[in-house]
Image 1 (cartoon, helix red, strand yellow):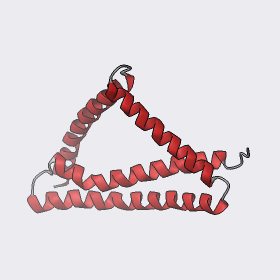
Image 2 (cartoon, helix red, strand yellow; image 1 turned 135 degrees about the vertical axis):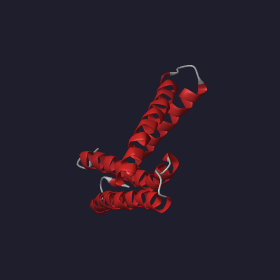
Image 3 (cartoon, one colour; image 1 turned 135 degrees about the horizontal axis):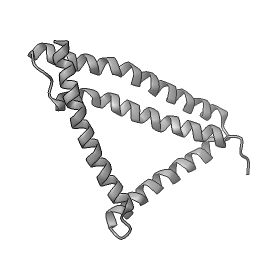
Length: 140
């Protein structure tokens, strides 16, 4: 049964690779378009997110308790992310054992989506903490 799971995961890797390449190509095209409104809207949204992060860092960098809270949030997201990995693997394995066939790609993606969400939260908070620590000693 484990061989079937590994075979399904190998097949899923190709599917994910193709999907990732397509999404990456579309996002790259949207970012490089200079006259299209969709490219401008995406760049504006990314710039807005960056400005909001910098404003939050400016408000937070003088408060050591807020800095410690941001660090604690980052570590909590990391622990939740690492704890969700075995759970999503167990869900995918449980599906295969109960149905006696390889799990479809959609089922594996759905079982891994909480893990991906927690990873995204952890990476966002971690980059925020890194920038916050770099800018904390700056006085103006």
